[in-house]
Image (cartoon, rainbow over all chains, first blue to last red; front, side, top):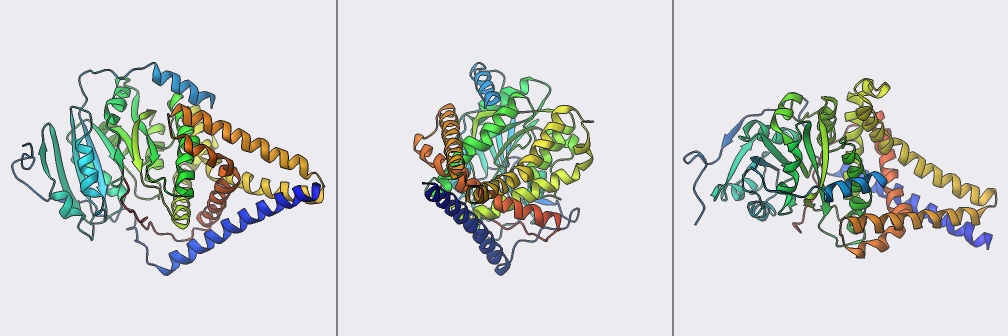
Length: 64
Length: 376
């Protein structure tokens, strides 16, 4: 009985950890193979904006 | 669990009552959301609240997001839907643009790929009757419960994230207003300088700024944002990796606050809780399980450890039953509580540990973007 329980505990733990580390390695590999979106350096962003539609103040009345 | 129950009772005893509505602007930052944007905006227009506007901030999308959002711009009864566009600068800068352009004293910041429940604003806005409340955190739920990973995440949001947030809400010190749904006083956002762009967890960083400025942050379980969770396990790892590094970056900015409770016990406790959640608990979970596995083999007490595992699993199932019932959620999520702790949380915790090591080593990272299918 003790051997069976030991095996269950060990196998469960090892499988979980191997899956976790394997998934993390796969994630890092995938990320290294595709370009990410570079964040602009702090303070270097532009905050300008433009209205897309300026018709009156709030755009057309859509209420039918 | 006890504090979350007290919050639940407190919430039930405070009914939603109609009074003069406080005007709100819903800020929707979007970046390459062409598959979701039209349906998402139409769902916002159906919200049950008499005084709100919708402001879409396109963060330099390279697809047809802007075109599709602009086609919906206009007035819909009392609701005005506006669309603005800016050069790409990340979600935080898109939200800051929205805050700067808001014409109302309150804003609701959300993710472009989320849907809000109809009664969200009506439930959340009543918290601002208390002049000490600077912000309200909403309840995030997983909409795409299509495979084991998304169902486990659905359970995690209910049993883990929301239960903790509910308990923190009872103490008025919610330490992360989730990105998918947060409601703020605009004056408070201006006082703390809006969102910073120097962390990967702008929501956690902003919440800490609001708490350290002395404002209360509450939780409203009936203000619901339905979000699309990562369906692929590698995308889930990517999300949690970013969350962990972002939280550590936000904590590092306040490292002096961690050393002593000079900003008040509540804020200090919140910071310590975040540190515990990000570093200590994952380490204890992974290395504790390793220790027990070794003990089972070497010391020869496998039955004790096996029954301890069973006991912990039973506790998890009990916590799942309690929280699922409290949120009137889907009972079909309960069986997943059996593998929640030892499989799901352990795998996530391993990714958190790697993220902690890489943050300490200052390994370069990019934001990236999770693929959304449009199940909301």
